[in-house]
Image (cartoon, rainbow, N blue to C red; front, side, top):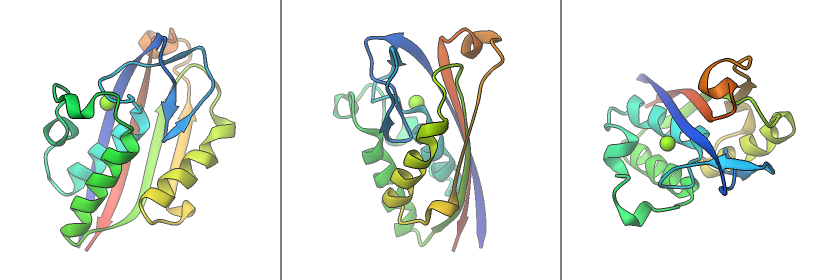
Length: 157
Ligand code: MG
């Protein structure tokens, strides 16, 4: 049996926060605001996994008014979702994702993110795709005020 899942997330870019994407800290003058570490890419992947298994959404599993999740490393949340879908008998076939961010350039960090995510999910690096693009200076992302991520996953049982 195949199950597809889709995930989307957006976080504001603000001063005074670390920029964490795909579980990797990226040197930049701003970071993403949020209750957790605000890793927009991992959140989109988490929601895609949750969606594929029809388990609700990230806010249902990890409420943002729960102090337990304050500033939490999103890798821990991804691990927990992976445990839940594994318990249901699912394996991940592949993940494809896109980060939309005006700055900084992500090219040098993409393969590091893929390796981090592969390790967390017991996958090969070639099962994980991360694409990066800008918003052509248009809108909230184009002004450098936010980052967006989208992800699609295919589960097999
Ligand atoms: Mg989020």
